Image 1 (cartoon, rainbow, N blue to C red):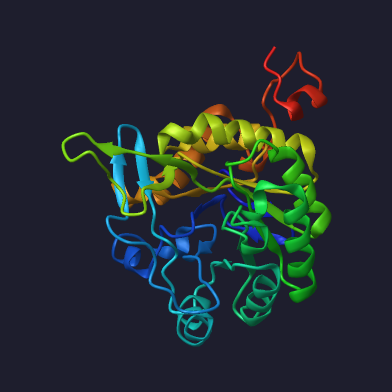
Image 2 (cartoon, rainbow, N blue to C red):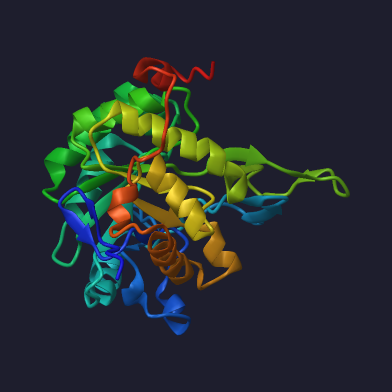
Length: 314
């Protein structure tokens, strides 16, 4: 029997597979037992209620999906009162995802959701920072450190910093998140993209641009996981384009201790339990007793750590 357990900091998971924020709801219980998952990661919430972006909000691409949902939310009070109790009934650890416009709002929200039943908080620092002309917190090391330091003071719970791929400084941002008090990193959120309908000459999204997810992003995000693992001493959760057990294995070999599955669930609602079973089968076939033994085992050579962090390919 393969041991599928993995450790994300102080949090022990029964297996390394969990949903990406915004792609999971209790409706999936009609398809499979939600207790099969390593963790439950809920849709991102904001301090106040918000409607989200104009429609259309989703657009298919040749190898993935563009979305510009805009984080519609009923606000923190409604979430704490009604949603957390529903998921706190499960034995599977509950991870709450939060977003805010400023560092102080982030800290206040973090404190508000630090309640019994919540195992960890995923902080979506990929969202716009109104104190930095709308640039995402995680685009710059300085803003990343600032917000993580405020969040660390606001909650005793494990903090998972969800990074943006829309930066040329992913390793430096990861280091800033670690210095600011993050307990783990989620690498990464969607990458900014755009599509145009050639019949109407209009963008396919109501907000013009949106986040690209799905198979197209996997090589990029896998590289970022690898770079971040070289840069920090934090557990890393890989996210981006994972639809098979082999995809999950790649992320773990690159250094991730767990993975998040998003777009694949929209296509195949049983994607996550299928990946869990596939991981067990892969390890059994290769004679690997513990899935955690895959972490960081890529057979890399020829580049110094400095070259990896700077992104040199030759």
